[in-house]
Length: 181
Image (cartoon, rainbow, N blue to C red):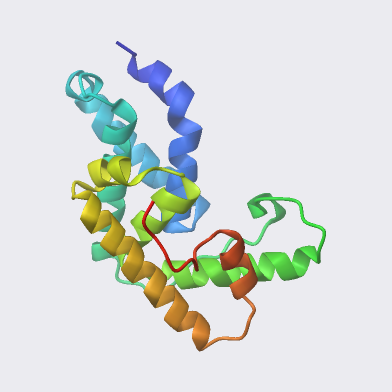
């Protein structure tokens, strides 16, 4: 059985990364992870007995994020444009790529919480439908339908915008017609 301290040391950075993708703000992400880890610590006996601790804690994180979004009174979205946000080195214009990525995240940020969580867990955490379903406590079919709805919404919003975000989303396979894995 893994201790809480060991788990945080091994997985803490990944949890913060997931939270940053969900909330789009570094400081809020750290607050979210701290709150979730505080709750996990209080019941670590139960958490550590779970079949998959990562799934359990990720579920706590996603659920807490959804609860936060329900309570938020402000619709302001923080945007972090520092160079550390660049996912990869490219051959093109770094400024244009950063603008594309930011525009893509703006579209993803406007999705409903469960659709956004599905997109983040599928395409950025690279989890399969079964694991996402376990985290979100829903069926695999629901995961696929959430992904399908999210992608349909993104496609619809992209059709109303210039090609600014299309290239970045195509790179991440978010515009594929088939979402079944």
